[in-house]
Length: 75
Image (cartoon, rainbow, N blue to C red; front, side, top):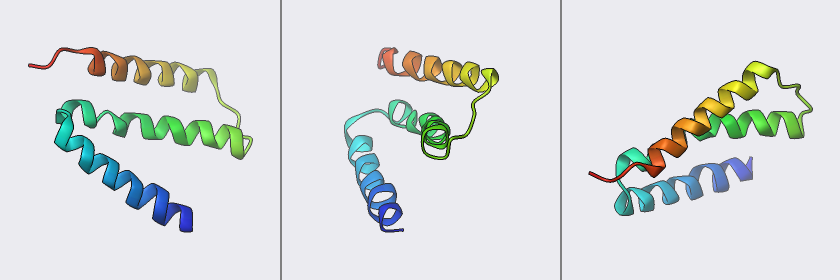
């Protein structure tokens, strides 16, 4: 419970606010796409959940979209 309060809530929010001041919102918002991937990976590593091929394909598509967003030029 302490981890969720300190790391997931406070630290993540402070990092998000700091990034909003230093980067465009389109780049900062990409974290929302990566969070589910982290949850899936943690579920596989920590809880021993099995991942299907469709989950790997979905993860690849999400990561590709995030990379494209992060590499795009600022307007």
